[in-house]
Picture 1 (cartoon, rainbow, N blue to C red):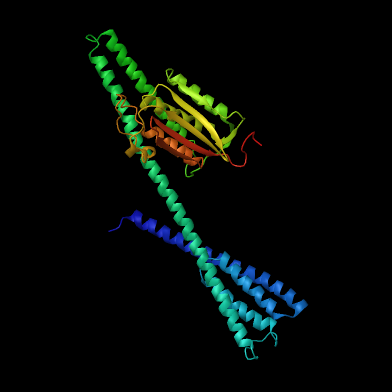
Picture 2 (tube, helix red, strand yellow):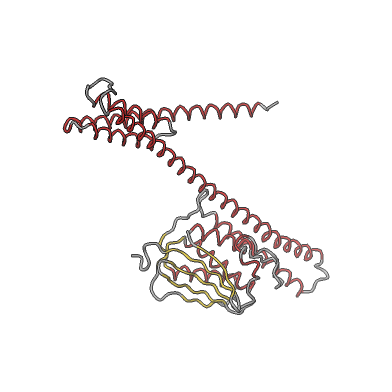
Length: 377
C-alpha cells in the first residue's frame, strides 16, 4: 500500500508532465506557423518578380530546416516538409490553386523535394538531440566532479578537524585533573599546545569560509584584475602573523603585473601551501616565486626538505595527504588545506600540481591572465 503523500506527489508529477507536453505542443505549433508564414511571404515576393518555382522550393526547404531546428521532436519537421511540398505545388505551380502532379517532370521534382525536406528535418533533429545529450553528459560530469570534490573535502575535514579537537579535549582534561601535580613547565606546555591546536582549527575554519565565496552550484568565481605583488605580500604577512618563525624568500616579476583573480581566495591558497611547506618539509627556508609565461602566471612554492612520498603525489589534492606525518605534528594534516587549494584553483580555471626534486618538493599553481597580460591594459 503506497502512502498518500507518494500518490499526491505522483499526481503532481503527472500534471506537470502534462502541462509541459501541452506547452511543447503549443510552442511547436507557434514556431511552425510563424516560420511558414514568413517563408510564404518571402516566396510570394520572389515568385512575383521571377516566376521561378525553384527559388520558392529552396525557400520552403530552408523553412523546414528552421522548423526542425527550433522545435522539439521529429514530427514538426516531417509534417512541415510535406506541407511545404503541397504549398509549392498548390500555390506556385501552374495550374495555380490546384494540386496537379501529372505534369511531365513534376512528380520527380516534388518527390525529390519531399525526400530532401524530410531527410533535412530528420538530420537536423538528430543533431539537435545529440547536442542535447552531449550537454547533459557534460553537466553530469561536472556534477560528478563536484560530488567527488565535496566527498574529498568532507573526508579531509573529518580528519583534520577531529584530531586537533581530540588533542584540545585531552590536554584540557589532563590540565584540569592534574593541576596539583603538574609542574609549571608542563602546564605551560599544555596551554601552548591547546593554543596551537585552537589556532590550527581557526585556520581550517578560514579555509572553509574561503570555499563559501565560490557561488553555490557554479564552478567559477568572480575575478577582477589584482596587483600580483600586493596579493603575494598580503599572503606572506598573514602567514608571518600566524607563524613568526617561518622563513620565506619571495620573488615576483619586476614588471607590474595584474592577474584576474579573487584576491582573498588566492591569498588563502598561498598561505595553505606555505604552511604545508613549513610544517611538513622539515626545511629551514621556503621559496615563493612567481613567473609570467605567455598568457599565464605560475606560482611556485619550493622547499628543500624531505619531499613527498611518490604514492601520495597523485592523490595529495584529493584528500590523499591526510595520513599522519612523522614529525610529531600529526594534528596538522595536509588533506583539507590542499583539497581547498584545488577547489579554489579549479574555480579560477587554473591548474595545480606537486612534484618532487632531488631535495624537497614544489607546489605549482597556474592562473590564466586572459587578454590583459600586464599593466591592466
